[in-house]
Image (cartoon, rainbow, N blue to C red; front, side, top):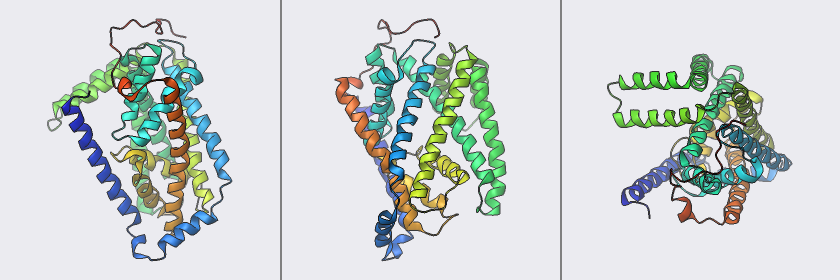
Length: 355
C-alpha cells in the first residue's frame, strides 16, 4: 500500500491536472460558446471529414511504436539484448495505456516496473534508459519546432521574428543535448555547478534535476559505441516525423490548411502542451493547443476543434486497448507493478558486454 504522503501527492496532482484540463478546454471553446450554431458546425465537420486517413494513421501508429521499441532496444544494448516486439513493445504499450487512463503520468512508472519485473532488471537500468529517451525526444521536438517556425507561412511577422530567436535557442539546446550525450560526466558536473550558483533555485529542485541527469549518465556510461548514438538520433528524428504525419493527416481529413511546416509547429506545440499536468489522455490541453496554433491559418474553429478530437482519439483508443491487452496477457496486477524490484536482486538478463 502506498504511503499516506504519496497518496496525498498523487491526489494533489490529479486535482491540479483536472483543473488544468478544464481551464484549457474552456479556453479552447470560449469563442464558440457565443455561437449557438457551433455544435451543429462541429457535427457537420465530422460528417464532412475524409476518414480514408484512418487506415494510414493506424499503420503509422504501429510503425511509431515499433520504432520506439527498437530505439529502447538500442538504449538497453550496453546491458543486455532484448527483442523489440516480444520483450519491449509490451511494457511500452502498457505504460502509454495507463498514461491514458491514470493521472500524474503514472504509466511511465508502470512501464519501468513491468519491464523490470519481466526481465529481472534493476529499476535503475530501466529508469535511466527512459530518461535518455526524453533527452533524444526533446532534441527531435525542438529541432522540428524550430524548422517549422522558420518556414511556415501565414504567421504574424512579429512571431516570425521571434521564431528566429527561438531557433537560435533551439540550436543551443540541441547542441547542449549532444554534449550531454557525448561528454556526459563533464556536462553533468558543469550543469550541477551552475545550478548551485543560482540563488533563488531551491536545493530540492537542483538535487532532483541532478539526480535525473545522473540517471541518464548511468545509462550512457556504457554507451561507448557512437554508431549506437547515431542510430538513436536517427530513430528519434524518424519517430517524431511519423508523429508529425499524424498531425498532417488529421488536418487534411478535416479540410484544414496543412503543410509540413504547419505540422511541425503544431507537433512542437502539442509536445510542450502535454508536458503540463492534465487529466489522463490530455483532454482539453490538446484542444487548446490546436485552437491556438491553427488560429493563424484558418477561421474554421469548429473544424479545428473536430480535428483535435480526431487526432487525439485515433491514438487514444488503439493505444489504450493494445496496452490493456498486453497488461492482461502479462499476468501482472496493478498492485504488483507498484512494488519495485529490489536493486540487489540477481539479474540474469543483464550482461556486461555491449551488443
